[in-house]
Length: 320
Image (cartoon, rainbow, N blue to C red; front, side, top):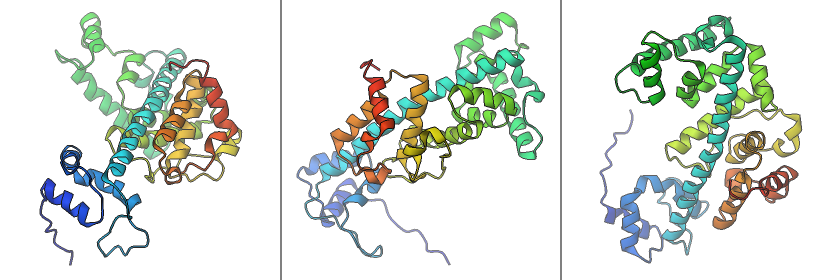
């Protein structure tokens, strides 16, 4: 028989006292309670773990290492917040480039309404057929929504006003409206020749691009929902079988953040070679001095030729 949940909500002051009882030093109680009120005890709790004393029994009341202050926890939380924003900045560049490359490739090859033509997709397997049917249903639902008097996207309103409610918007409008997850799913079921042409722009094979997009989708979702990422183990492992990046990818833990930073930088080197994304990542780690091994970063990571080349590429334009 399962245990009945009977925990009661605690007041801010009670949670603050609980932290003090666990050995946390709180020099400014008023400021501590302000953070607990505005961030929440539950959201901050995962950041406590790296400050707990080691070798404690999970069944006992966990206590903090001697000398640990509440400001250290807030500093780690703030680092994670800025790290999420930095990753989103990189993901945005990738996402925009994939959208543009996909719609340009397919529109030129098959016309502006390629997404309405089943022959442009791999539909030989039941799961592929299901994905295409889901895409078409979502598209039909969205077309109805976009025809309403106040659609969320201005360009759809102008399109239907000019060309009539029965017209099908062109590829560049449709692709811009897709979520990142839908974009990834759409790429998966494209014809192999088309997938190869799109992936070639990023100097990747189609399977690697598919895997990397899936990995970044998961990272993006965590970042967009303000989830902790600094020491998270992600449940989607990206492909590492890429010969040109073998020395930097080899031996890296696929579930941790570091390999995703490699992926982001590799995309950025193609889509925005003058970006200082890599240098800003290094600066962020130097400013906060977190436990980088919890993110999968090896000691001396920034001395690897892959990162040295990235820093040099970005130094040409310090504004990006």
